[in-house]
Length: 191
Image 1: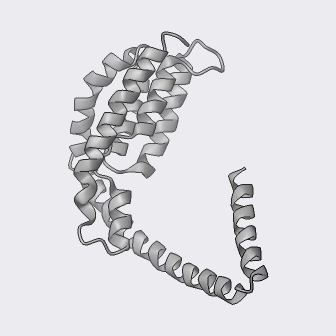
Image 2: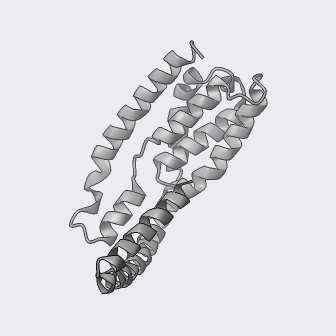
């Protein structure tokens, strides 16, 4: 559906530019934007490679394992049925840890595995269990200790201090995650 909306927005803009006699300005804008898009994408690729390398070092050094050990007791309190299943808890912990460290590519397989394990534990058939909803909420809130994507984009567009978003990101995503868990726990009693 969103593709249709974007198509109509672009088509309307181009046609409006042509009918108002500004077709040359529209074509210049299109060419200029494609040039800057390619430069941004190439800049982002290099910066993302750097951050992926740093995060791989954190993973190999055991930092992500230490973070997982800190998270495990907290998550055992939050998740009802998953707390009793080591495979489900392992996948949940690894997904959330990878997201916190800015390793979203590594987090995706763990997220899929966690949902499969939570589905296995669920007794609600095709409906999402409370643990599945809570995991989805935590994954969407995605507490960020290292917001590597934001830092990369800011660096690619020439920010003087691209990492200045780290503290606000930790505070914001932490508050969002806490509020989301509280709301999820309240609403699970009614639904």
